[in-house]
Image 1 (tube, rainbow, N blue to C red):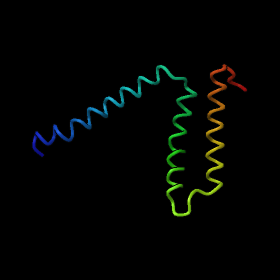
Image 2 (image 1 turned 90 degrees about the vertical axis):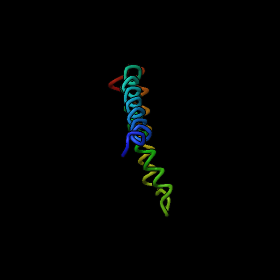
Image 3 (image 1 turned 30 degrees about the horizontal axis):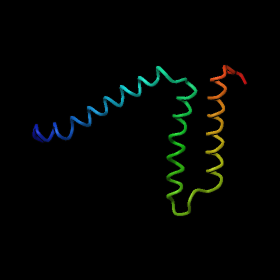
Image 4 (image 1 turned 180 degrees about the vertical axis):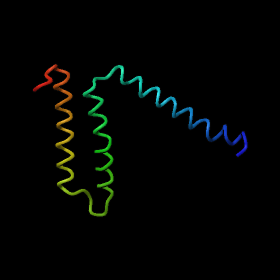
Amino acid sequence: MDGRTYFRVVVPIGLFFSLSLICSKQVYLYLSVAFIQMLKVTAPLTLSLTVGNNASGGPDDDMVNEHGKIKSECAGESVGHRRGNYYR
C-alpha cells in the first residue's frame, strides 16, 4: 500500500474512530448511570428485534414480550434513579 492510499483510506478511519471514542467518553460525564445502562440494554434488543423482523418467519410473540419486559424494567429503573428512589 503506497502512502497516498494509506492517507486516503486508513487515516480517516482512525481519525473518526478516535473522535467517536472521545465523544462517547465525554457523554459519561453528563448522563446518569441508569440512563447509560438503559441505552446499553436497548441497543442489542433493538438489533435482535430488527434481525427477527427480517427473518423468514418474523419475530415470534415470546421474543417480543421478553424484549418489552426488559425495556420497561430498564425505563422504570431509570425513572426511579432520577427520583432518588433507589430501593423502590
